[in-house]
Length: 164
Image (cartoon, rainbow, N blue to C red; front, side):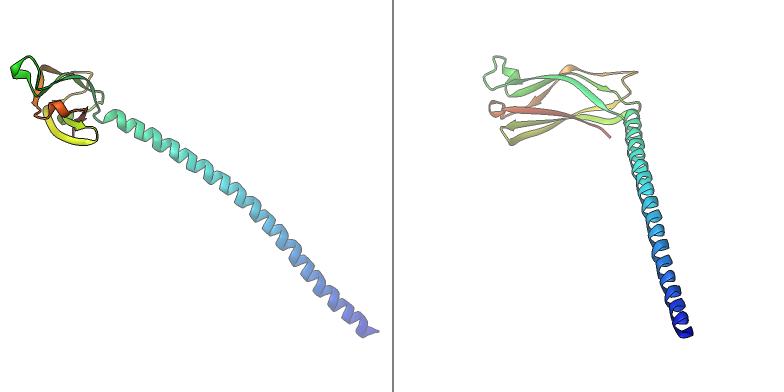
């Protein structure tokens, strides 16, 4: 009988250890899972805040950088133009303004002439430095004239400001 009691005590002791281990293991895992979810939420909020701050920093930097804005017009004089000196030319007029805070250096206008998707000609008009629009604006006056031997074939014109 003593052996049975001892056997039962040993079995109960082993079983209680196993039950305790399983109970505490489940409780620990549940606690870790809950903490993991909480930390994941914190990380998501921090990542969102980081994105917002990065966007705001980029916006602030863009306000400081030079930024050229054009108000341009142009007229393409084809080979049949009634004024002999204007034939096969492109006349560009208007203004270029720097909306940024710092001076735009080495400014120019890149003019690309196309026939549908085929590039026919690329020209550049050098303007120089343009201060912030708070202080000045560059007027293209008198208008700039570019020679264009393929004026009759031009279907599209792109004018892009460039600066450093």
